[in-house]
Length: 120
Image (spheres, rainbow, N blue to C red):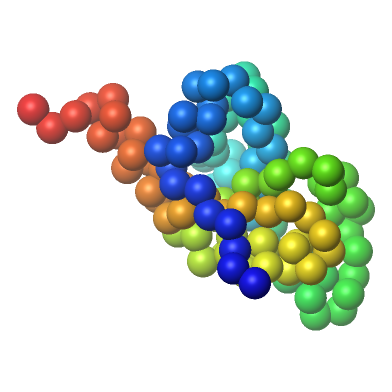
């Protein structure tokens, strides 16, 4: 099964189109608190990847995972996209509709910086 992916540019466009977006950030809480993608139409949730990886190992179901909606696309992100892809693969086995942000927060920041601070 191939994982759905979204580029930072496509996510930005969807935000500007005022689509409601559910974003799951699987980085450590301090990184999330330091910076995360936000917007008035974004519901951002931070669940550490270790909680999601536990689902695979022990088939544990964490209460926070239950709070994720199954009837809505969830865009999963991390620092570079690797952890997000692992987490998305696990969540998709539990029937969540997941999409990975390509390149993670790193690519997002690069895209936003290039958009607002273009090279002269």
